[in-house]
Length: 118
Image 1 (cartoon, rainbow, N blue to C red):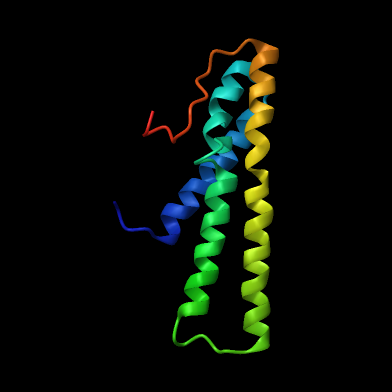
Image 2 (cartoon, rainbow, N blue to C red):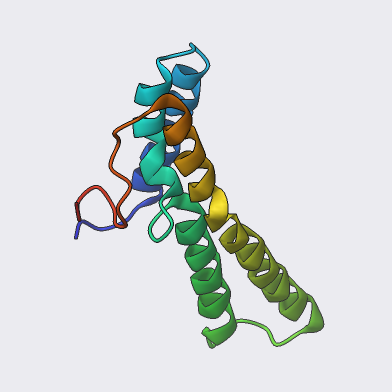
């Protein structure tokens, strides 16, 4: 696995921005669904990944020996965990994709796993 850097993460967010711009151009719905589907996958999609990332960040901050043990820090960690729960709740968006696929008769695969796993 290549080393993660702020630039590699920025590249991912720029890709999402490009997708948003593309979707604003009103592409064919089936093509749009195919592009968005990996983001909303029930197991590996963005809501689940972001929730896991926020929980991991909270744990990293909390467990680091240099982190001050103050009420303020405890509240910040609690906010990260709350945000993680809220993001994780969005995993049900994959049901929206199922409904849209039915509406457009899409043949886009909907099995679990990221694009690399399929």
